[in-house]
Image (cartoon, rainbow, N blue to C red; front, top):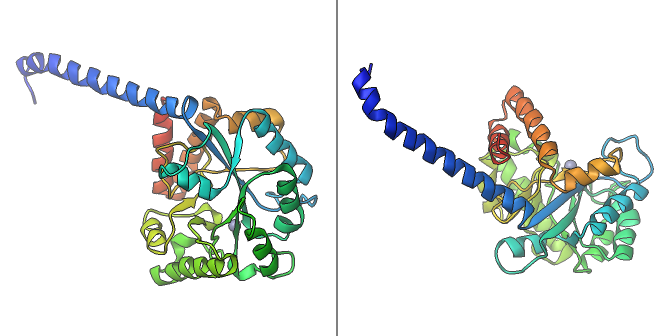
Length: 294
Ligand SMILES: [Zn+2]
């Protein structure tokens, strides 16, 4: 136990240390907010099926899709694809300060029949993540359709693995096969390098990342909500899951990175991830809350 004299001697030093810690925390918080508000803000949106059958939670109708995209365009966001994002983050390309990246998971047939014509009409760029084992299945995109779309440089294609399994549950060898085989298959179909990955169910753990890197990927997308910036981790990129029921005001709050919305979001995700034992996701949530000043 320190005696009173020791405490008296140490007190001024402790005060200085605490004050410095506070100032460092404050400045890093300010920097982080600047990154999101004054610097680049890259919003990545995760879509699944686009059609009028709303029985699936993640289905968005064509009309809502057009409204959501138009809302971003009206607010000055510029459309990019995953290759543009990677080139920007690795310093090979410049981008406007506000961009949005449309991504489409699972490889639904609607990617070709509904999304592709809409994207062309609106001159938008986008990235598609088909599940390889489902290509050519009924209701899914076909090899021919993928080949046709890949000839247009506005669209990039990434892996959503071969069989859409929960990656953290796989043994290393099976995980490696899911990642490598899907990349090689896509490269054969599109004739282009496949550098991006979308984790099925958004599920990953820290040990997934080096295996994805060894398998040839340069970036990977989660479904942890949030906006990406210059210092984002390329293997835990955030995406906002687009749903049909979002009202325009909520859509604006979410895509414009409203701190209050994100505070609520990360607080609830933190509770869920602690309850589910997802320590990696819990760490991300804590860091985000810290950046938001809590
Ligand atoms: Zn999926």
